[in-house]
Image (cartoon, rainbow, N blue to C red; front, top):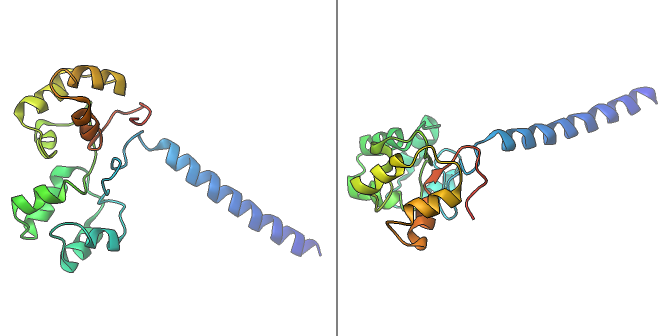
Length: 166
């Protein structure tokens, strides 16, 4: 009887620790570090989700899954272009899937990968550093584009330590 009780306790303890570990890992991830609303994160997406994205072939999906995690969208872009995806196909892919960029450390090259972002907006993203919260982002970037566009940009970026965008 004692062995059965100890085994049951151990089993429950393992279950509780597994849940606790999962919650801890989720809290440690930078707020907003997952791809934004509506975007797929290529580092975590299931193969079936990747397969449904623009210009993805079974071979590209297999290679992408084997190669991940990608440290940045630049690294992902190099992989996709090496797979013979055209720059136009990659741009279309980024309308559906993206590796989020840290607003406080992202490079011009990374920001330029966001669909619709040019040199000027890339410079604005860098000019207002350090980014502390989404209200600041709305205020500063909102000087150049409307709220719908700032909301769209939020899918592609994150602010470390800030609560996710509304």
